[in-house]
Image (cartoon, rainbow over all chains, first blue to last red):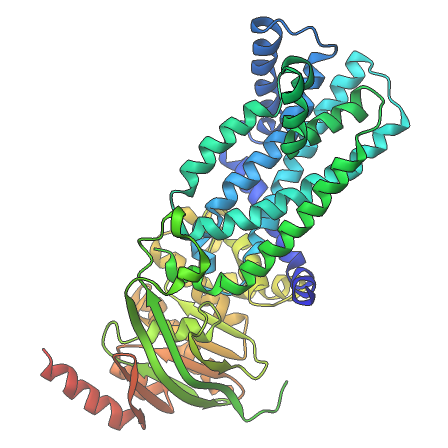
Length: 261
Length: 246
């Protein structure tokens, strides 16, 4: 644990700089540049808006905001964890030449994800203003919700990153699992209202992403408070997963390079 | 600066590669690490390098030279034995140092520098010197994936040569780039070596490099030290040996 903190301190500047540089590279790489940061979530929102509102005839209020909140959180979690599987391999050039604690790579990935999510939530705020959704002080609960999301994503990411080095077929598995998870997270439909009674509650509390999305909607759109017990439970689980992940990485990271080809 | 006389101690170092191809999801149990064939790349190597010494390492392909360097730089873990750096900073210089291809040369200078343990201010201060030495000119602001392989290694060499670490590990670097740059980097090497505080380990096949630059040469053969001693003697014997095996 001490080592973890001193490593974070030591590599903090590196994380910050690499995050910035990675984002910049992504932006300069494409024709429309930074506009994609806005355009991408906007386009996906339109697609799911069409599916939800037109195909499934959803009658939810403020439906674009509803979809947008779900999508922002989902994209952050999905991209970070899916990329973490291939993360060590993707940074082969660096990893085979110099030592760095491998979870630093994950922090860079988190940094990139956070910036993208921030842009996406800026759009949420704009839509909230357009629809004139009333806001209460409960909005502040959004901060602990985000914190739990970060910790949980990091914890799951470290473990996927570790196994991703050894098992190349993990990518296929995560792709399938995450597709399923996507549909079970109630991103473009109301999980509680659409799924029959006992199952909706189960889905909501077993799947952290569904829960976090729902909680974020509660505080941002409906001026209510989130259910605190699951938030606390997922926070603790996130911390435990992170500790397990960090310890595993410290223990095995020096064999990663030997396995890669 | 530490005043230790010994810069690096390697004690009974063993490094094994395991055949991990059969790793499936089902068997990713961590205790299964020992299954599969084991290839012993380095077997029981021990040596010490005093501060300021230039150690050359020779040996035929697959004798464990690069593995040894990687272990010293901290990328590999030792399966048995230990490596003590006595608190020195270290950098591994080999063909194509770890660059992120989408980023520009300048950004890579900063990132590499930070990975080597330098502060951002230090690197920014030294960056002009690096760019100048690398002869990249305007290409420094272009993504690294637009570079030719020569430019790539020039930049790699320049970063490690200008950002001076206490111990430098060099893997066949003098053989890359055009002849002009090879000459230049060879001279820079000599200059770096003349600094009595710097410890250098060079892996090379070139008899010229090893005899001219090194104080001592270690001959690795199939993961073990076959001989260690004066460059001239070792290299003569090594050349003789290589001719015989032809």
